Image 1: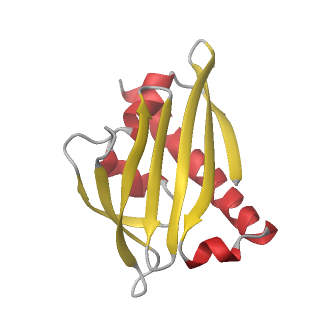
Image 2 (image 1 turned 90 degrees about the vertical axis):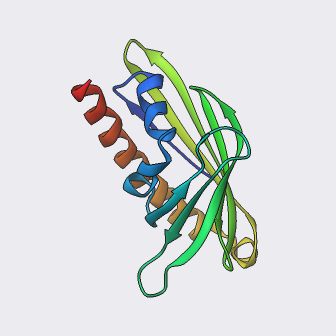
Length: 148
């Protein structure tokens, strides 16, 4: 499992607002290039966002489904990218001071052919990807905070 964390200068609710806006997913999740649709009740358990991931012309269409939601502290999704596989991704938001939140992403490949390729190199790639994902999430959350 790849686990990455970052301390962000924003309240958990501000960061959660970005997580809860499925239409921004492609702005901060590395590898997602287009959001095709978002269920109205996102991010309630069982709702989905429908995306396209990967570079054109090889991009794939799939969906990600909410498996758990504890607003504004935890979001667990099953991120699909079939036929390659799927992963379980857990975002946790922990306040560590006034206006400061530790955000953690834990990601584990849980299905499909990618599951059989799990090794330290893949974990390193996921780690680097999620490090950039958190950097982008922080940029958006703090931009939203400044604009509020």
